[in-house]
Each structure stands twice: as structure tokens, then as C-alpha cells.
Length: 300
Image (cartoon, rainbow, N blue to C red; front, side, top):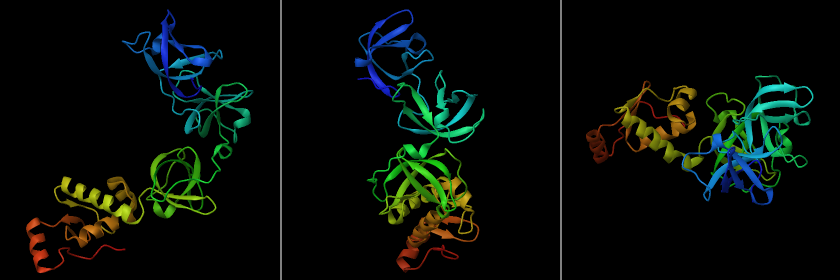
């Protein structure tokens, strides 16, 4: 059965002048206009398409990919506003996505960007958007595990950090203390679940916690050192945003990573740089039981 507002793999029934007609089961036959038909495709094959309603309210298919499908959140640009209907959003398809008046969270103007939830209207069976995102979040207790990798979308800033939407379902909090700099509304991020609280609230971070984080970060810094010829201009005093840009990790994670490399006698650390210990020096130090690192140890 084909689902409206989702991608579907549908059999091609026949070819006509307008395009291909696809078998959508209980929804009947759906037209895939000729301009969207890939070369070499013919009746009898199946094709991956997105199904929605066109401007004349007919079900149609397209091989194009919208920025979001039914059940997902997305940050979309307002392309026009109709006082009697609502706002129309660019979602990557020929027909713009309607944000009905009843689903507006506040006034919008052409050119604005809005965080919305995409859903199928029960009455009209049309794909529409809602800027009232809170009502579409999943309120059931989450089954996330600490350390689990998740996809995040930034919803907005709070005094503690940023509210994020986890996996297009739950709300989470990303703390300022774990960030190198400001984030933008609608920004997609890869993150990790830090804690699921008894009340269902979820704390997330951009880095793994504890020992799960240190080893990958250590390996990332070591690989960067090797690629740079053995030295990099980073140290305890480097700015958090510079570390995030160079290594994709927080300053706290970076300090833990270089601390691990220091204890393994793999790097020297001083106030200007981190540098690989030459293999010969490392071997002599290991035999002597001494420390290879020069200068102050990385802070905790």
C-alpha cells in the first residue's frame, strides 16, 4: 500500500504521453510525470517515488526528494504568505508546502525560516506543515540508552543551552557548557544521549561521554598529528571554537584526548603546540621509565 507523504516503491503499470502510471494499491493508479522518469525505466519494473497531492489535489508521484517527509521536523524557508490560507514553504518540490493559519506559532513573512513538523492532515489527506512543534513531539517515555548515537535538530535557545529534537520524536537539552559556540535554529547535528532522567527529560551532547569518548577523540587527534607531519598549533589554551573546527570535538574532549596521548608518551605538549614524540625518543623513555612529554601536563 502506498503512503501519502512518504517514499514508496511502486510497480509501473503502463507508459502514456503524460508519463508512467504506477500501482498504488488502494489509492489507485498514480501518475509519475514524464519529466521525473529516469532513463531506461519501463513498465513491469518498480520505482522509488514520493507520493503527494498536486495543486489540483490529485495524487501524483515524483522521483525528487523533499527536505522532509511526513513525521519529520525541518527548518524551511517561507516563499509566500496568503492572508486567508497561511504561509507556503520551500520543501524542495515543485509544489510548495502549506503551513495553514491554524498551525502558525506567530506571524511570518516571506524569506523567514521556520521550524515545522510535516504531517498528513486527517480531513484533506494533504501533506501540510505545523509550526506548533511541541504538540507533535512524542511524549511517551523514551527508550534511549546512555551513549546512544542520535540525530538532532536545534529547536531554540534556553538559559541552560539549546532545546533539540531527537530523532524527529523527543525533546532534549544540549548544555552551553558542552558547546564551543552558538548554534543556529534548525541546525542538524550528530549527537549522543548523555542521560535519560526519571521524568523522561533527555540530556544530550555532541561528544561521547567518559571512556567511550576518549578513545575515538584520542585517535582523531593522533591521526591529525600524523597527517600534519607531527605537529599542530593546538594546546590547553586553544579556543574552544578553534578546537571544534579542527577536530569536531569540544575543548573538554580535546584535553582528555591529549592527556591520554601524553600519558602514553606519544606527544610533547607546550604552550604553543602539541608534537609527536620521535619513535627513538619514545623507546628510550619507555626503557628508562621516564615521561616523554615536555612542558606542563594537560589540564583536567
